Image (tube, rainbow, N blue to C red; front, side, top):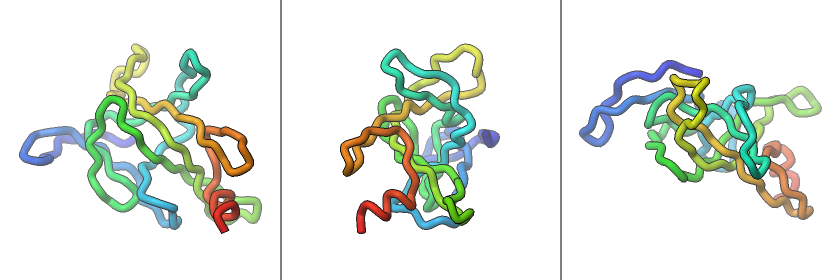
Length: 136
């Protein structure tokens, strides 16, 4: 997780944490999520990940995004496909204030939400290459 730093945003002093931009074409602007930072599962079985130490992050296109409780966010992480070519893991989630006492430096978590695919399966994480194949 990158270090948070003071940042002037809309005339106010905030904190910002730079997230990764991407060299992989995505379906839309997304915020990078390190899928290795899984921390817990909620009562409904939804996975929760560490997300940000700051109120401002940037998306894959470099836009500043101000986080707030309940905000829906599209996320991505890097992966390799079966041909060992760069691919992206994709997910949708909701921002949650950190309620976990053992991660005191993290301000925001993200709870992933299930996405219904064309084949009626629901899953939390999917691959960009799969997404493109289904949409052709």
